[in-house]
Length: 297
Image (cartoon, one colour):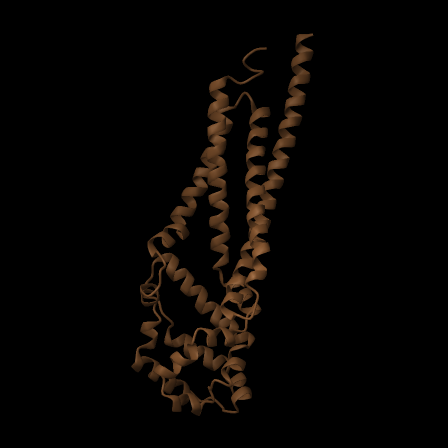
């Protein structure tokens, strides 16, 4: 058989190396994409819909922090007490506002904006948008003067400065440099370009053996897809461990639920593409062999 029928050892070896590179880069690309989607506003809203925001705030001692920084008389005057905070926070419009604030925090961490904090306008807007809900829960009609007093109190105590991304990260164990590198657009496009280059190199190296390389790429994609699906299934089995009475664990569990669904979806897509490529390669090989033996006879 001539060189156009079977690949040489060198081409087969280089193809195997490129397939390994493709496998690794594809896994990294998928996990990056899943992680980026997990910190979107829509994902955060989904998480907050699964967890009592009031209970989460209580778990994190948010109300105690407020009372430490805002005059208790001011909070009492507008009806914000430990008994009403849960009902105040568990409202769709409040959830939307909190989701937007949290997603902006996530984007600030990713972009490296350590000065980002909750703007006064966001506090005022949240209070104004939910004035009717506050009155219904507390029995107090919120006035413009009430909002100004709360804003002034927040400014005087400097609590918003303490809530800046830089201040939060300073007291956490998060490696901001590594986090920013992982989520940055530059890293994302670098991985994407590496993925494209690996595929192009495989096709160019095997330009005379497309029937083989389609199968090679297909097997690589199927392997990656199965690993990604397996990762999603592991998270699926681990999820029940988080959904218990501990609110913070429920919060983490909700994020894991988003990750597992996204992993399963990505893995399934990669697996299907791999299967299609394997079938395509098999058809091309059969047609080539048919034409090859007809030419010899």
